[in-house]
Image (tube, helix red, strand yellow):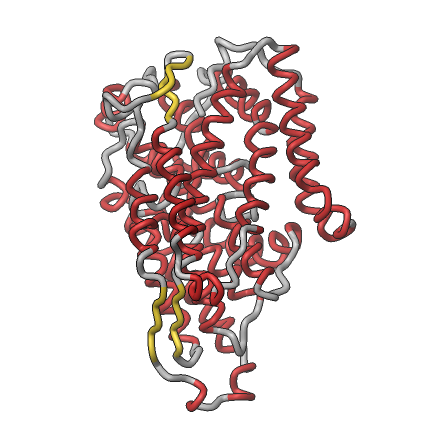
Amino acid sequence: MFLNAISFQEPPLWLVSPFVFLLMSIAVMPVLFSHFWHKYYKLISIGLGLFVMTYYVVVLDNMVLPIESLAEYASFISLLTILYVASGGIYIFVDVESKAITNVIFLFIAAILTNLIGTTGASVLLIRPFIRLNRYRIQAYHIIFFIFIVSNLGGLLTPIGDPPLFMGFLKGIPFTWTFKDLMLEWIIANSILLSIFYFFEKRNTKLDEIDNPSLFTNKLIINGKRNIFWLLLGVASVFLDPNIIDGLPAIEFHGRKLSFLREIIQLSAAFFCFRYASKNALKSNDFDFEPIKEVAFLFFGIFLSMLPALQLLESFAHHQKDTLQLSPGLIYWFSGLFSSVLDNAPTYINVFTLILSSSGFSINSIIDVQSFLQNGNIELLKAVSTGSVFFGAMTYIGNGPNLMVKSIAENSGIKMPTFGVYILKYSIPILLPVLTLVYLLFFAF
């Protein structure tokens, strides 16, 4: 989303309260009012989103930002839908003993795979096999580290890996730069997390009580291979952006081309994929639509209610750009902290907009973006990219796959920590020190 604080009237500060209330509800309601929340969260999220949208349209006389936000939400949820449905129809069973080193290797391979099919595709495809692999000793920390590594930090090496990087690619950043310039950050952060995970694994002695080699066949079983085609189609369709490829059908709106062909392809593929999927694979995966429905309803409210927060953020940055000293360290923490509570893709694009405008460049010009990089500003781009991707793991709503993985795990009978416990017990004591070390090594000086 590209917010132009000069062209549009600023919203009042109090209009941020629906977004804050929604975040607090996601954090607190499931703990204090579990029955009420699970019954009414859809109405709460939709209601808050529609309230903010109505205020923009009626009071601020601004239809542009809500429509752009809805268009981005449509692109977001259609991609998640095809990846969720296609992955849900692929049954993978790694029937080997759940040793610590086995799980480390699994997560490492999954981290690599995220860069080929995205954090969403890899998360949905591999979370169930990961749960089955650890069926005799599964704990909440297994899912937490899966979210840390597979749903977030693993996807730093290609624009396909994580939505913020793909947004940058669409704006003119070369496809291969992440692999060349962010490899060291990827290796260090993921290696440390895998080492911490190994420590947790060695302390988990639950399997020792039932250790029996005859329980495992040491076979890899894959059912529903036809869905791999639909999964790859979903990933490939992401590139059908009318703002990049001339000639694609699109809706002209406020100087921007809004995509619909890509979304039609993705939703149609999801329909046919589910219609002709292997029923055995779906049954073996205990497939249902509840996790994707939860993500769809919650992020509908998030996308619309966060509009005032993003617009006020960019407005502040615009008015202070002459006094702001945009160092890589500041950009890393700024983009990271906001990515923790806002979806990391719009956070990335707004911070990148600030970086470009402070140097006299426009994010709407591919030539400007490329000129910016050629002028030795690669460190600022590395900071916003790393911060946005890595800090998306700090909360359940920092990145789309997080909430989906949580929901799948809960549907599999795993008791997951609440929003607040996730942050206090795992993100702050485990993830934050790793992110701080990345800052000290690459962006502090």
